[in-house]
Amino acid sequence: MFSLRVTWKKKPIRPSQFQTVSFLFELMKACGASQKLRTDLLCFCFVSLAFVARGAPSSGEVTEALRKAASYYGDELAVNGGYVYYYSPDLSRRLGEGVAVETEIWVQPPGTPTVGEAFLDAYDATQGSTFLYFAISAGNALLYGQLKSGGWRNSIDFDSSGPRIDEYRNGKGRGKNLSTLDDDISQSALRFLMRLDEALMFQGEEIHEAVEYSLTNLLKAQFSNGAFPQVWGGPSRSVNPPDSASFPEYDWRSEGRIKNYWDQFTLNDGLAGAMTEVLIDAHRIYKKEEYREALRKLGNFLIQAQMPEPQPAWAQQYSEEMIPIWARAFEPPAIAGRESEDAMISLLRIAEYLDDNRYLEPIVPGVKYLEKSMLPTGKLARYYELETNKPLYMERDGKQYKLTNDDSRLPSHYGWQNPSRLDMIKMAYRARLAGRSVDSVLEPREVDTDAVESIVKSLDEEGRWMSRYSGELLVGQPKFQDGEEFINSQVFHDNVKLLAAYLMQMKR
Picture (cartoon, one colour):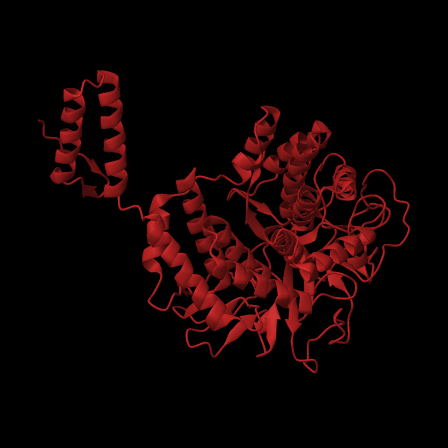
Protein backbone atom coordinates (compact mmCIF):
# COMPACT_ATOMS: atom_id res chain seq x y z
CA MET A 1 0.00 0.00 0.00
CA PHE A 2 1.14 3.54 -0.56
CA SER A 3 0.33 7.01 0.67
CA LEU A 4 -0.02 10.02 -1.59
CA ARG A 5 -1.40 13.53 -1.19
CA VAL A 6 -2.40 15.70 -4.20
CA THR A 7 -3.82 19.22 -4.20
CA TRP A 8 -5.52 21.18 -6.98
CA LYS A 9 -5.80 24.88 -6.28
CA LYS A 10 -8.07 24.64 -3.25
CA LYS A 11 -8.78 21.39 -1.43
CA PRO A 12 -6.54 18.39 -0.76
CA ILE A 13 -7.86 15.01 -1.85
CA ARG A 14 -8.86 13.12 1.27
CA PRO A 15 -6.61 10.15 2.27
CA SER A 16 -9.66 7.88 2.42
CA GLN A 17 -10.19 8.43 -1.30
CA PHE A 18 -6.64 7.34 -2.01
CA GLN A 19 -7.01 4.31 0.18
CA THR A 20 -9.85 3.27 -2.11
CA VAL A 21 -7.71 3.83 -5.20
CA SER A 22 -4.84 1.90 -3.63
CA PHE A 23 -7.12 -1.00 -2.80
CA LEU A 24 -8.41 -1.17 -6.38
CA PHE A 25 -4.86 -0.99 -7.71
CA GLU A 26 -3.71 -3.89 -5.50
CA LEU A 27 -6.84 -5.90 -6.28
CA MET A 28 -6.24 -5.60 -10.03
CA LYS A 29 -2.62 -6.63 -9.48
CA ALA A 30 -3.72 -9.72 -7.57
CA CYS A 31 -6.15 -10.60 -10.36
CA GLY A 32 -3.37 -10.47 -12.93
CA ALA A 33 -4.21 -7.15 -14.59
CA SER A 34 -1.41 -5.78 -16.73
CA GLN A 35 0.85 -2.98 -15.54
CA LYS A 36 -0.53 -0.69 -18.29
CA LEU A 37 -4.14 -1.31 -17.24
CA ARG A 38 -3.29 -0.67 -13.58
CA THR A 39 -1.46 2.54 -14.50
CA ASP A 40 -4.35 3.74 -16.68
CA LEU A 41 -6.76 3.14 -13.81
CA LEU A 42 -4.54 5.04 -11.42
CA CYS A 43 -4.28 8.04 -13.76
CA PHE A 44 -8.02 8.07 -14.32
CA CYS A 45 -8.74 7.99 -10.61
CA PHE A 46 -6.25 10.77 -9.86
CA VAL A 47 -7.81 13.05 -12.48
CA SER A 48 -11.36 12.24 -11.39
CA LEU A 49 -10.62 12.78 -7.70
CA ALA A 50 -8.77 16.00 -8.39
CA PHE A 51 -11.77 17.23 -10.42
CA VAL A 52 -14.04 16.50 -7.46
CA ALA A 53 -11.59 18.06 -5.03
CA ARG A 54 -11.57 21.22 -7.06
CA GLY A 55 -15.21 21.73 -6.13
CA ALA A 56 -16.71 21.33 -9.61
CA PRO A 57 -20.51 21.27 -9.30
CA SER A 58 -22.25 18.02 -10.10
CA SER A 59 -24.74 17.76 -12.93
CA GLY A 60 -27.49 17.49 -10.33
CA GLU A 61 -26.44 20.74 -8.66
CA VAL A 62 -26.27 22.57 -11.96
CA THR A 63 -29.61 21.20 -13.15
CA GLU A 64 -31.24 22.27 -9.89
CA ALA A 65 -29.75 25.77 -10.24
CA LEU A 66 -31.16 25.97 -13.77
CA ARG A 67 -34.58 24.82 -12.61
CA LYS A 68 -34.63 27.29 -9.73
CA ALA A 69 -33.49 30.27 -11.83
CA ALA A 70 -35.84 29.47 -14.72
CA SER A 71 -38.80 28.98 -12.40
CA TYR A 72 -38.23 32.38 -10.82
CA TYR A 73 -37.99 34.10 -14.19
CA GLY A 74 -40.91 32.26 -15.74
CA ASP A 75 -43.24 32.32 -12.74
CA GLU A 76 -42.41 35.69 -11.17
CA LEU A 77 -41.19 38.01 -13.95
CA ALA A 78 -43.07 37.05 -17.11
CA VAL A 79 -45.89 39.21 -18.46
CA ASN A 80 -47.90 37.01 -20.83
CA GLY A 81 -44.69 35.03 -21.35
CA GLY A 82 -42.50 38.05 -22.14
CA TYR A 83 -39.78 40.00 -20.37
CA VAL A 84 -37.99 43.34 -20.08
CA TYR A 85 -34.32 44.22 -19.46
CA TYR A 86 -34.22 44.97 -15.74
CA TYR A 87 -36.31 44.53 -12.60
CA SER A 88 -36.03 46.07 -9.16
CA PRO A 89 -35.66 43.47 -6.37
CA ASP A 90 -39.24 44.08 -5.19
CA LEU A 91 -40.49 43.99 -8.82
CA SER A 92 -42.06 47.43 -8.49
CA ARG A 93 -40.04 48.69 -11.47
CA ARG A 94 -39.67 47.05 -14.87
CA LEU A 95 -37.28 48.69 -17.32
CA GLY A 96 -36.62 48.42 -21.03
CA GLU A 97 -35.47 51.57 -22.75
CA GLY A 98 -37.15 53.58 -20.04
CA VAL A 99 -39.89 52.43 -17.68
CA ALA A 100 -42.10 49.68 -19.09
CA VAL A 101 -45.83 49.84 -18.44
CA GLU A 102 -47.42 46.87 -16.69
CA THR A 103 -48.64 45.30 -19.93
CA GLU A 104 -45.44 45.86 -21.91
CA ILE A 105 -42.56 43.54 -22.78
CA TRP A 106 -39.40 44.16 -24.79
CA VAL A 107 -38.17 42.47 -27.93
CA GLN A 108 -34.82 44.23 -28.31
CA PRO A 109 -32.05 42.29 -26.53
CA PRO A 110 -31.78 41.57 -23.70
CA GLY A 111 -35.57 41.26 -23.75
CA THR A 112 -37.94 38.40 -24.52
CA PRO A 113 -35.95 36.57 -27.26
CA THR A 114 -32.80 36.71 -25.10
CA VAL A 115 -34.59 35.12 -22.15
CA GLY A 116 -36.29 32.63 -24.46
CA GLU A 117 -32.92 31.54 -25.87
CA ALA A 118 -31.78 30.83 -22.31
CA PHE A 119 -34.78 28.58 -21.71
CA LEU A 120 -33.97 26.67 -24.90
CA ASP A 121 -30.34 26.29 -23.83
CA ALA A 122 -31.53 24.76 -20.56
CA TYR A 123 -33.99 22.53 -22.42
CA ASP A 124 -31.31 21.29 -24.83
CA ALA A 125 -29.05 20.40 -21.91
CA THR A 126 -31.67 18.71 -19.72
CA GLN A 127 -34.77 17.95 -21.82
CA GLY A 128 -36.73 19.39 -18.90
CA SER A 129 -40.32 20.17 -19.88
CA THR A 130 -40.46 23.25 -17.64
CA PHE A 131 -37.80 24.98 -19.72
CA LEU A 132 -39.64 24.19 -22.95
CA TYR A 133 -42.91 25.46 -21.46
CA PHE A 134 -41.36 28.82 -20.60
CA ALA A 135 -39.74 29.00 -24.06
CA ILE A 136 -43.10 28.36 -25.74
CA SER A 137 -44.67 31.07 -23.59
CA ALA A 138 -41.98 33.52 -24.70
CA GLY A 139 -42.57 32.51 -28.31
CA ASN A 140 -46.30 33.11 -28.01
CA ALA A 141 -45.62 36.55 -26.52
CA LEU A 142 -43.57 37.42 -29.60
CA LEU A 143 -46.27 36.10 -31.92
CA TYR A 144 -48.72 38.53 -30.33
CA GLY A 145 -46.53 41.48 -31.30
CA GLN A 146 -45.52 40.39 -34.80
CA LEU A 147 -46.26 43.21 -37.23
CA LYS A 148 -48.18 42.89 -40.48
CA SER A 149 -44.91 43.66 -42.27
CA GLY A 150 -43.48 40.46 -40.75
CA GLY A 151 -41.01 41.64 -38.14
CA TRP A 152 -41.03 43.40 -34.79
CA ARG A 153 -40.46 46.73 -33.12
CA ASN A 154 -38.57 47.17 -29.86
CA SER A 155 -41.50 46.51 -27.52
CA ILE A 156 -44.93 44.86 -27.41
CA ASP A 157 -47.92 46.12 -25.42
CA PHE A 158 -50.74 43.67 -24.64
CA ASP A 159 -53.11 46.54 -23.88
CA SER A 160 -54.85 47.32 -27.17
CA SER A 161 -55.29 50.92 -26.00
CA GLY A 162 -51.72 51.25 -24.73
CA PRO A 163 -49.48 54.19 -25.63
CA ARG A 164 -46.86 52.21 -27.57
CA ILE A 165 -48.83 49.67 -29.57
CA ASP A 166 -48.16 49.05 -33.25
CA GLU A 167 -49.98 47.46 -36.18
CA TYR A 168 -49.88 43.90 -34.92
CA ARG A 169 -50.65 41.12 -37.31
CA ASN A 170 -53.29 39.73 -34.93
CA GLY A 171 -55.42 42.86 -35.43
CA LYS A 172 -55.12 43.96 -31.79
CA GLY A 173 -52.90 46.97 -32.41
CA ARG A 174 -52.74 50.14 -34.43
CA GLY A 175 -50.16 52.65 -35.60
CA LYS A 176 -46.81 51.90 -37.19
CA ASN A 177 -46.16 48.87 -39.37
CA LEU A 178 -42.40 49.34 -39.60
CA SER A 179 -40.40 46.22 -38.76
CA THR A 180 -36.87 47.01 -37.65
CA LEU A 181 -33.49 45.35 -38.02
CA ASP A 182 -31.90 47.93 -35.73
CA ASP A 183 -30.22 46.67 -32.55
CA ASP A 184 -30.90 43.00 -33.42
CA ILE A 185 -34.64 43.42 -32.78
CA SER A 186 -36.38 41.42 -35.52
CA GLN A 187 -33.33 39.21 -35.96
CA SER A 188 -33.24 38.09 -32.32
CA ALA A 189 -36.97 37.34 -32.36
CA LEU A 190 -36.66 35.35 -35.56
CA ARG A 191 -33.59 33.38 -34.47
CA PHE A 192 -35.33 32.38 -31.24
CA LEU A 193 -38.56 31.42 -32.99
CA MET A 194 -36.72 29.35 -35.60
CA ARG A 195 -34.88 27.53 -32.85
CA LEU A 196 -38.14 27.00 -30.94
CA ASP A 197 -39.81 25.72 -34.12
CA GLU A 198 -36.97 23.21 -34.47
CA ALA A 199 -37.24 22.15 -30.81
CA LEU A 200 -40.96 21.50 -31.36
CA MET A 201 -40.08 19.42 -34.45
CA PHE A 202 -42.08 21.92 -36.54
CA GLN A 203 -45.33 20.77 -34.94
CA GLY A 204 -46.20 24.10 -33.32
CA GLU A 205 -48.36 25.34 -36.19
CA GLU A 206 -48.69 28.99 -35.12
CA ILE A 207 -44.98 29.35 -34.41
CA HIS A 208 -43.99 27.63 -37.65
CA GLU A 209 -46.35 29.80 -39.70
CA ALA A 210 -45.13 33.00 -38.01
CA VAL A 211 -41.53 32.11 -38.84
CA GLU A 212 -42.36 31.42 -42.49
CA TYR A 213 -44.30 34.69 -42.72
CA SER A 214 -41.42 36.66 -41.21
CA LEU A 215 -38.76 35.08 -43.41
CA THR A 216 -40.83 35.60 -46.55
CA ASN A 217 -41.31 39.29 -45.82
CA LEU A 218 -37.71 39.76 -44.71
CA LEU A 219 -36.39 38.44 -48.02
CA LYS A 220 -38.79 40.72 -49.89
CA ALA A 221 -37.26 43.65 -48.00
CA GLN A 222 -33.71 42.77 -49.13
CA PHE A 223 -32.46 45.04 -51.88
CA SER A 224 -31.43 43.51 -55.20
CA ASN A 225 -27.74 44.13 -54.40
CA GLY A 226 -28.01 42.13 -51.16
CA ALA A 227 -28.21 45.04 -48.72
CA PHE A 228 -30.92 45.37 -46.10
CA PRO A 229 -32.64 48.53 -44.88
CA GLN A 230 -32.70 49.35 -41.19
CA VAL A 231 -36.52 49.36 -41.26
CA TRP A 232 -39.06 47.87 -43.66
CA GLY A 233 -42.81 48.19 -44.11
CA GLY A 234 -43.07 46.18 -47.31
CA PRO A 235 -41.02 44.93 -50.27
CA SER A 236 -37.89 46.90 -51.16
CA ARG A 237 -37.98 49.41 -53.98
CA SER A 238 -36.09 48.87 -57.21
CA VAL A 239 -32.48 50.11 -57.07
CA ASN A 240 -29.56 50.13 -59.49
CA PRO A 241 -26.46 50.93 -57.43
CA PRO A 242 -22.87 50.85 -58.67
CA ASP A 243 -20.76 47.78 -57.97
CA SER A 244 -18.47 49.47 -55.45
CA ALA A 245 -18.54 52.10 -52.73
CA SER A 246 -16.96 55.52 -53.16
CA PHE A 247 -16.23 58.72 -51.26
CA PRO A 248 -18.64 61.66 -51.62
CA GLU A 249 -17.58 64.40 -54.01
CA TYR A 250 -19.58 66.99 -52.07
CA ASP A 251 -19.14 68.47 -48.59
CA TRP A 252 -20.53 65.60 -46.54
CA ARG A 253 -20.62 67.76 -43.40
CA SER A 254 -23.53 69.80 -44.70
CA GLU A 255 -24.78 68.03 -47.82
CA GLY A 256 -26.16 64.67 -48.83
CA ARG A 257 -28.56 64.13 -45.94
CA ILE A 258 -31.44 61.75 -46.63
CA LYS A 259 -34.51 62.10 -44.40
CA ASN A 260 -35.48 58.43 -44.57
CA TYR A 261 -31.93 57.19 -43.95
CA TRP A 262 -33.39 54.04 -42.39
CA ASP A 263 -34.63 53.01 -45.85
CA GLN A 264 -31.10 52.98 -47.30
CA PHE A 265 -28.36 50.32 -47.30
CA THR A 266 -27.55 49.82 -43.60
CA LEU A 267 -24.82 48.16 -41.52
CA ASN A 268 -25.36 50.14 -38.31
CA ASP A 269 -25.42 48.44 -34.89
CA GLY A 270 -24.40 44.97 -36.02
CA LEU A 271 -27.04 44.56 -38.71
CA ALA A 272 -24.78 42.53 -41.01
CA GLY A 273 -23.76 40.07 -38.32
CA ALA A 274 -27.29 39.59 -37.05
CA MET A 275 -28.65 39.05 -40.56
CA THR A 276 -25.86 36.62 -41.35
CA GLU A 277 -26.85 34.49 -38.36
CA VAL A 278 -30.55 34.63 -39.31
CA LEU A 279 -29.93 33.50 -42.88
CA ILE A 280 -27.50 30.75 -41.88
CA ASP A 281 -29.95 29.44 -39.27
CA ALA A 282 -32.84 29.65 -41.73
CA HIS A 283 -31.02 27.59 -44.36
CA ARG A 284 -29.65 25.11 -41.83
CA ILE A 285 -33.07 24.50 -40.27
CA TYR A 286 -35.38 24.67 -43.30
CA LYS A 287 -33.01 23.72 -46.16
CA LYS A 288 -34.58 26.21 -48.59
CA GLU A 289 -32.23 27.47 -51.27
CA GLU A 290 -33.74 30.97 -51.15
CA TYR A 291 -32.17 31.55 -47.72
CA ARG A 292 -28.76 30.45 -48.95
CA GLU A 293 -29.11 32.76 -51.96
CA ALA A 294 -30.04 35.69 -49.69
CA LEU A 295 -26.91 34.98 -47.65
CA ARG A 296 -24.78 34.95 -50.79
CA LYS A 297 -26.26 38.28 -51.87
CA LEU A 298 -25.55 39.79 -48.46
CA GLY A 299 -21.93 38.65 -48.73
CA ASN A 300 -21.64 40.19 -52.18
CA PHE A 301 -22.96 43.49 -50.83
CA LEU A 302 -20.39 43.48 -48.02
CA ILE A 303 -17.62 43.03 -50.58
CA GLN A 304 -18.97 45.93 -52.65
CA ALA A 305 -19.50 48.16 -49.60
CA GLN A 306 -15.83 48.07 -48.58
CA MET A 307 -14.52 51.58 -49.14
CA PRO A 308 -11.52 52.11 -51.46
CA GLU A 309 -7.99 52.93 -50.35
CA PRO A 310 -6.78 54.61 -48.26
CA GLN A 311 -9.66 53.48 -45.98
CA PRO A 312 -10.64 49.94 -47.01
CA ALA A 313 -13.28 49.44 -44.33
CA TRP A 314 -17.03 50.04 -43.99
CA ALA A 315 -19.50 52.81 -43.15
CA GLN A 316 -22.77 52.60 -41.20
CA GLN A 317 -25.14 53.64 -43.99
CA TYR A 318 -24.89 54.02 -47.75
CA SER A 319 -27.03 55.80 -50.30
CA GLU A 320 -28.23 54.11 -53.49
CA GLU A 321 -25.05 55.51 -55.06
CA MET A 322 -23.00 53.48 -52.51
CA ILE A 323 -21.75 56.64 -50.79
CA PRO A 324 -21.62 56.91 -46.96
CA ILE A 325 -24.46 59.08 -45.63
CA TRP A 326 -25.74 60.64 -42.42
CA ALA A 327 -28.14 58.73 -40.18
CA ARG A 328 -29.10 60.24 -36.81
CA ALA A 329 -27.72 63.65 -35.85
CA PHE A 330 -24.73 62.05 -34.10
CA GLU A 331 -24.05 59.43 -36.82
CA PRO A 332 -22.06 61.11 -39.62
CA PRO A 333 -20.85 59.68 -42.93
CA ALA A 334 -17.58 58.07 -41.85
CA ILE A 335 -15.60 54.88 -41.64
CA ALA A 336 -17.10 52.98 -38.70
CA GLY A 337 -14.74 50.89 -36.59
CA ARG A 338 -17.29 48.64 -34.91
CA GLU A 339 -19.37 48.09 -38.04
CA SER A 340 -16.20 47.27 -40.00
CA GLU A 341 -15.34 44.53 -37.54
CA ASP A 342 -18.91 43.23 -37.76
CA ALA A 343 -18.71 43.18 -41.56
CA MET A 344 -15.49 41.13 -41.47
CA ILE A 345 -16.89 38.66 -38.93
CA SER A 346 -19.95 38.30 -41.17
CA LEU A 347 -17.73 37.62 -44.19
CA LEU A 348 -15.85 34.96 -42.23
CA ARG A 349 -19.09 33.18 -41.38
CA ILE A 350 -20.40 33.50 -44.93
CA ALA A 351 -17.16 32.17 -46.40
CA GLU A 352 -17.36 29.14 -44.14
CA TYR A 353 -21.05 28.40 -44.63
CA LEU A 354 -20.92 28.79 -48.41
CA ASP A 355 -17.45 27.21 -48.56
CA ASP A 356 -16.27 30.11 -50.71
CA ASN A 357 -13.07 31.90 -49.75
CA ARG A 358 -13.86 34.74 -52.14
CA TYR A 359 -15.61 36.31 -49.17
CA LEU A 360 -12.31 36.42 -47.27
CA GLU A 361 -10.65 38.80 -49.74
CA PRO A 362 -11.70 42.06 -48.02
CA ILE A 363 -10.42 40.97 -44.62
CA VAL A 364 -6.64 41.38 -44.91
CA PRO A 365 -6.74 44.98 -46.20
CA GLY A 366 -9.53 45.79 -43.74
CA VAL A 367 -7.60 44.48 -40.74
CA LYS A 368 -4.35 46.15 -41.77
CA TYR A 369 -6.08 49.51 -42.17
CA LEU A 370 -7.87 49.28 -38.82
CA GLU A 371 -4.71 48.20 -37.02
CA LYS A 372 -2.98 51.33 -38.30
CA SER A 373 -5.98 53.38 -37.17
CA MET A 374 -6.16 52.18 -33.57
CA LEU A 375 -6.12 54.78 -30.82
CA PRO A 376 -3.19 54.95 -28.36
CA THR A 377 -5.42 53.11 -25.87
CA GLY A 378 -5.64 50.12 -28.20
CA LYS A 379 -9.31 50.83 -28.90
CA LEU A 380 -10.98 51.70 -32.19
CA ALA A 381 -12.86 54.94 -32.69
CA ARG A 382 -16.47 54.45 -33.70
CA TYR A 383 -15.86 56.93 -36.53
CA TYR A 384 -12.91 57.92 -38.71
CA GLU A 385 -13.22 61.01 -40.87
CA LEU A 386 -13.54 60.23 -44.57
CA GLU A 387 -10.18 60.46 -46.38
CA THR A 388 -8.29 62.26 -43.55
CA ASN A 389 -8.77 59.24 -41.23
CA LYS A 390 -8.85 61.43 -38.12
CA PRO A 391 -10.93 59.98 -35.26
CA LEU A 392 -14.29 61.71 -35.48
CA TYR A 393 -16.57 62.50 -32.55
CA MET A 394 -19.48 64.69 -31.50
CA GLU A 395 -19.98 67.31 -28.84
CA ARG A 396 -23.49 67.90 -27.55
CA ASP A 397 -25.13 71.18 -26.63
CA GLY A 398 -28.68 70.42 -25.59
CA LYS A 399 -30.25 68.67 -28.56
CA GLN A 400 -27.61 69.94 -30.98
CA TYR A 401 -24.51 67.96 -32.01
CA LYS A 402 -21.27 69.36 -33.38
CA LEU A 403 -18.52 67.45 -35.21
CA THR A 404 -15.12 67.41 -33.51
CA ASN A 405 -11.84 65.50 -33.47
CA ASP A 406 -11.56 66.06 -29.71
CA ASP A 407 -12.62 63.17 -27.46
CA SER A 408 -12.60 65.11 -24.17
CA ARG A 409 -16.34 65.96 -24.08
CA LEU A 410 -18.10 62.93 -25.52
CA PRO A 411 -21.85 62.42 -24.93
CA SER A 412 -22.32 59.45 -22.62
CA HIS A 413 -25.22 57.82 -24.50
CA TYR A 414 -23.15 56.37 -27.35
CA GLY A 415 -20.16 54.08 -27.79
CA TRP A 416 -17.57 56.44 -29.30
CA GLN A 417 -14.58 54.17 -28.65
CA ASN A 418 -14.68 50.38 -28.47
CA PRO A 419 -12.29 47.53 -27.65
CA SER A 420 -10.66 46.06 -30.74
CA ARG A 421 -11.70 42.61 -31.98
CA LEU A 422 -9.02 42.53 -34.67
CA ASP A 423 -6.90 39.82 -33.01
CA MET A 424 -9.93 37.54 -32.85
CA ILE A 425 -10.74 38.29 -36.50
CA LYS A 426 -7.18 37.42 -37.55
CA MET A 427 -7.32 34.15 -35.60
CA ALA A 428 -10.66 33.23 -37.17
CA TYR A 429 -9.28 34.09 -40.62
CA ARG A 430 -6.31 31.76 -40.06
CA ALA A 431 -8.63 29.05 -38.76
CA ARG A 432 -10.69 29.24 -41.95
CA LEU A 433 -7.60 29.02 -44.15
CA ALA A 434 -6.44 26.00 -42.14
CA GLY A 435 -9.78 24.25 -42.61
CA ARG A 436 -11.00 24.72 -39.04
CA SER A 437 -14.33 26.22 -38.08
CA VAL A 438 -14.29 29.96 -37.42
CA ASP A 439 -16.58 29.26 -34.45
CA SER A 440 -13.62 27.62 -32.71
CA VAL A 441 -12.36 31.19 -32.34
CA LEU A 442 -15.53 33.28 -32.43
CA GLU A 443 -17.52 31.04 -30.06
CA PRO A 444 -15.15 28.74 -28.11
CA ARG A 445 -17.03 25.94 -26.37
CA GLU A 446 -14.79 25.20 -23.37
CA VAL A 447 -16.44 26.05 -20.06
CA ASP A 448 -14.61 27.49 -17.06
CA THR A 449 -15.45 25.26 -14.09
CA ASP A 450 -14.64 28.01 -11.61
CA ALA A 451 -17.17 30.27 -13.34
CA VAL A 452 -19.81 27.53 -13.15
CA GLU A 453 -19.17 27.06 -9.44
CA SER A 454 -19.41 30.80 -8.84
CA ILE A 455 -22.68 31.08 -10.78
CA VAL A 456 -24.27 28.21 -8.87
CA LYS A 457 -23.21 29.65 -5.52
CA SER A 458 -24.35 33.19 -6.36
CA LEU A 459 -27.95 32.12 -7.03
CA ASP A 460 -29.99 33.33 -4.05
CA GLU A 461 -32.75 31.49 -2.20
CA GLU A 462 -35.45 32.90 -4.47
CA GLY A 463 -33.66 31.80 -7.64
CA ARG A 464 -32.24 35.22 -8.57
CA TRP A 465 -28.84 36.38 -9.73
CA MET A 466 -28.65 39.89 -8.33
CA SER A 467 -26.58 42.57 -10.05
CA ARG A 468 -25.20 45.69 -8.38
CA TYR A 469 -24.74 48.88 -10.39
CA SER A 470 -21.24 50.35 -10.42
CA GLY A 471 -21.42 52.98 -13.15
CA GLU A 472 -21.08 50.72 -16.21
CA LEU A 473 -22.87 51.53 -19.49
CA LEU A 474 -25.97 49.33 -19.73
CA VAL A 475 -28.35 48.74 -22.62
CA GLY A 476 -31.28 51.11 -22.31
CA GLN A 477 -29.28 53.44 -20.05
CA PRO A 478 -31.26 52.81 -16.86
CA LYS A 479 -30.90 55.44 -14.16
CA PHE A 480 -29.61 53.26 -11.32
CA GLN A 481 -27.84 54.66 -8.28
CA ASP A 482 -24.32 53.46 -7.48
CA GLY A 483 -24.61 50.26 -5.49
CA GLU A 484 -28.28 49.72 -6.37
CA GLU A 485 -29.31 46.09 -6.81
CA PHE A 486 -31.34 44.92 -9.79
CA ILE A 487 -32.21 41.82 -11.80
CA ASN A 488 -30.67 41.79 -15.28
CA SER A 489 -32.06 39.63 -18.10
CA GLN A 490 -28.67 39.61 -19.83
CA VAL A 491 -27.09 38.13 -16.70
CA PHE A 492 -29.85 35.51 -16.54
CA HIS A 493 -29.22 34.58 -20.17
CA ASP A 494 -25.44 34.45 -19.84
CA ASN A 495 -25.51 32.39 -16.64
CA VAL A 496 -28.08 29.90 -17.93
CA LYS A 497 -26.15 29.56 -21.20
CA LEU A 498 -22.93 28.79 -19.33
CA LEU A 499 -24.56 26.28 -16.98
CA ALA A 500 -26.26 24.55 -19.91
CA ALA A 501 -22.96 24.42 -21.81
CA TYR A 502 -21.34 22.88 -18.74
CA LEU A 503 -23.94 20.10 -18.68
CA MET A 504 -23.45 19.50 -22.40
CA GLN A 505 -19.69 19.35 -21.88
CA MET A 506 -20.12 16.75 -19.14
CA LYS A 507 -22.05 14.57 -21.59
CA ARG A 508 -19.35 14.67 -24.27
